[in-house]
Length: 114
Image (tube, rainbow, N blue to C red; front, side, top):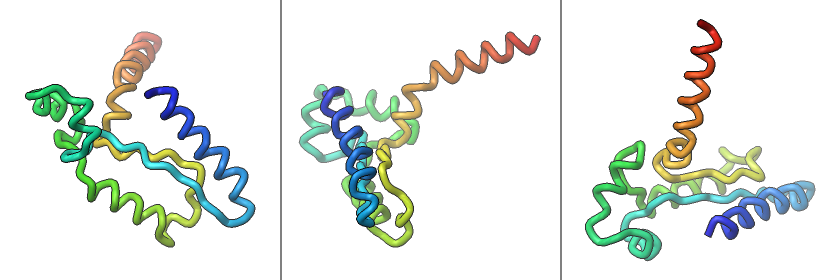
């Protein structure tokens, strides 16, 4: 699954470069856990939804409307200068995954400033 996601991410960037000269913007939405979808059902174990929600910084599952609103924004005149972006719509899960690295960097900086 990671290789497929990386392929979509790179394809988004390459297409944005290749098609940008023609005024075509290319972006991708990287969804997190979305309630009521087949993906959420396949990727979760029975009874594990509460644990999954606890691991999401916004403390809720996403909705289909969350994805739709982001897609509408990207298609709107408000996003005419956005191209080649892979935008997570995941309640902060992508940021949460780098939290240990941020904390380690902060500790190293604090140690260096002593």
